[in-house]
Length: 225
Image 1 (tube, rainbow, N blue to C red):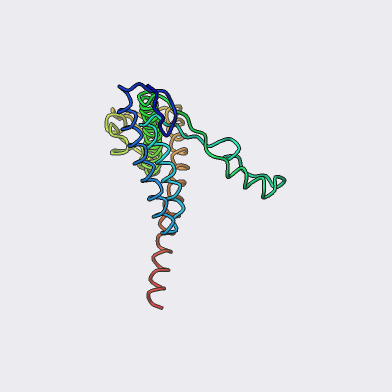
Image 2 (spheres, rainbow, N blue to C red):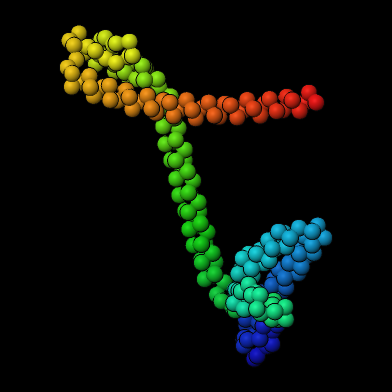
């Protein structure tokens, strides 16, 4: 036998009930859509209107095997030369839709969600790594050049050096022997590098604290007024 449903296709009597139930579910889904649009329109919340459209396309229709796509003409932005009439005609064109296997659409949706989750996780991990690198850089730069060869900045300092000059540069090893010129030259170079990094740290933290102080001052001034 052949039955004529809202979306016309051939069906056997054994599957007619299943198809009818499916279309009843589709009707229920479609009826929820204008209600959501109406409520958003009354609240003058355009974003919720668009969200309702996305929900219909991405959530309500795929389990029914319905794929809704904007037509290329309707989705394309209107050009100045097209004129108001052409733009209105393009906007009036109906969206394209087609029927597919709901199970296949569900697998595709799950795959898309999995990829999105993986991408979000990778982005979060990259951001966490960036923040850690920045924190490590700040922590290293916070050490004063005069302290860089002493504990706790250098945990094993006692096992390496026993004496320092006025600027904190090691002069003798742990056994009390004077360091050679080559070793001192290298240490001085490292200390000079740390001096520049520490100056950067001081300028960065001074800028941050200055901004906070200025904000607090402005708030206090406003309260006094």
